[in-house]
Image (tube, rainbow, N blue to C red):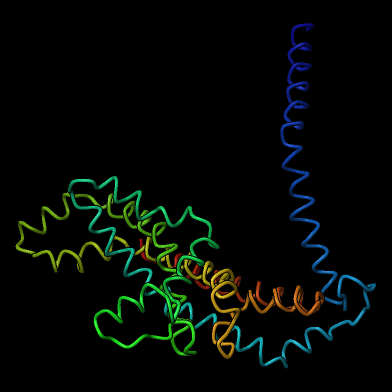
Length: 296
């Protein structure tokens, strides 16, 4: 009996020690996750510019939101970015993953090189591409001038600014999706390709009849991650264009940031963020439906 009591006492003491290990995370969660969420929800129904006291406005922030053409323009720009960025990112990532999956020298080296932009700061990458895209002294236009081609206004033309940002974002993030495609390719049994070769299937047929169908679940995951990441577009337009020219690169996240920290409309920005989160949640749920409906 005494031994059993000592064991129970030791278990209780170990549980108390475990709470101390969990405490830093609990404090972090309460301060930087729970409190901001609750405060932002309260802020939705108030007018506040940080300096003056909060003023209750009820649903006026939402009324303003649904009659704000600039917000809908920002959402439209975000969807345009997604329509350019996601197919481009999938095509580039799949192409490079197929090359890296094949046997060859320095395969591990090139895998690390393609993943390097992912770990570099987004601001550093954006400044680098700003120098590449510069109209007067940019590297790209300098190369075009050498071969006799007229300079391209990458970030000045409203029709080219968002595609230029999409290309830069693809270069920055494609390493993650190359790794995901590589995992998917490595999980395809080699016996399937061997059987297809014995049946006379060429490389073209094997790619469309075996590789792409077997990568379907990976493709769905990459589309979901790319969509969520695309909705978070902020650093690139903020540093490169500031949302211009003519608001052609004003993303949803950048518009919310400007309303909060540039104009001081904290309550309105909170309402924008709430609606923006609902849009992202809707897209994620739709993609979840696609995953669940995928045949096993």
